[in-house]
Length: 94
Image (cartoon, rainbow, N blue to C red; front, side, top):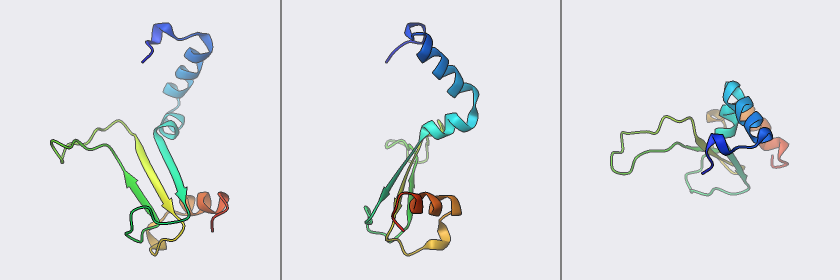
């Protein structure tokens, strides 16, 4: 981990820009993976994960991080937003 004081001018500028723009900050915290198969076997187009404490399952880390897996072979199109459907098409997997 690098301390804020140790960042060079360019890194500090980029850090400031991300921290000041909520939409950019959120985009950095979301990881989206598109796969041509169902990684988890539940037949869903989208699986979303957020950090949860294993020792206290009701406790979530509210830091905005999110991992989203889009599956091109899902069977529940009504549960996927139009934006995610467009991302899937944009990746060449429709």
